[in-house]
Image (cartoon, rainbow, N blue to C red; front, side):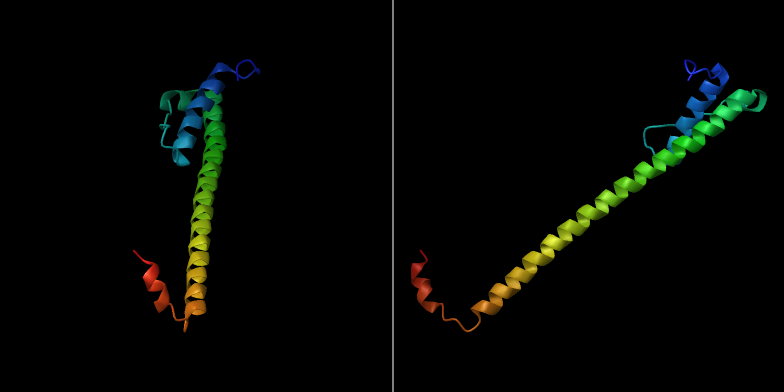
Length: 109
């Protein structure tokens, strides 16, 4: 951010706010960070922290939502496959009703 022309205090605040936003959004790998003294005394740090928090919390929530959707899609696919197998088994049972298979017993060892 500094290379892009942002003040050091803003960049520091943005990084701390982003880590905090990630944590608030559900990340297990980030920690809440906020230099309260700088936040209260340095406008650039406070603005950077607020901007970073909002942006990263939103991004983290989006990631969490996508993960939950992916898990639900996998569950749905597994349930669909299970239902198809159950239907196939029921159809096979229906087809075999009334068929005399006693002569096939001699094929078993």
